[in-house]
Picture 1 (tube, rainbow, N blue to C red):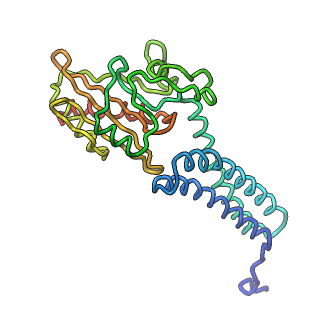
Picture 2: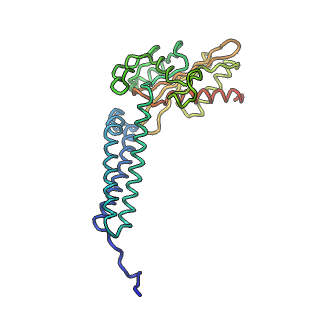
Picture 3: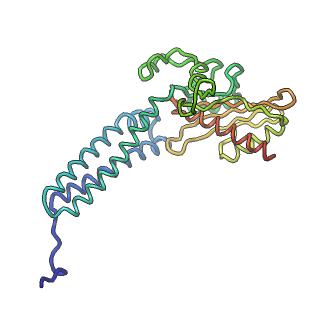
Length: 294
């Protein structure tokens, strides 16, 4: 009987090394995206380079290369025995690169399906104006997007969103929102319905609920003026460090109060729906707090 314990393990040779290299490239391709985001947040390079070049420009090509290398590694691993070691490494590389490429493809599809907006609010007929304090902070960080009463999408947007250049943001936002009169399901539209929050509560109660919601989210408060019913805050994204500004205005409405919200990005043409989602979530949380008396 052969003593298996003393039999030397079969060496996959160059095929094992090739599969290991494919796995390393797949892992490095993921780290590439992390480096692009963290480097931008830490100020090693600008967001145009970190997001525009590294992530959107070069990122997909790097993933495609890693995916192609993984497929070749799988084929090579199946040529002859021993297959276990190189095949396991190759499949690991294929799984990592495949999932990453799928995520990037889904991200691209999402971006193409959303309008090129970065400024959202509940009532464009009476836009919320930023305070001098907020404008000063935006200027200090190199904000490229102005805050206007009736903004228009730049003509350059036509390159990726044909026909959008020159359109009023208010009209595009309204067309993108869910409307029960014309849509059967919220899934038919990219944005949730955004409208002022009007309740029977007092302005003081609305302000307290709004301030509590902002504080609970951990946003940086720029302005808090209960006498004027105004709150301004800034949210910083975890990865790239992008800053979006949120403005809240509470006023009396009949025997109750009316609360409006505006959320706008400092840089970038499209926010991928982040501001609309933020406004909707904030309104829902404030309403829930008012109902609970918190």
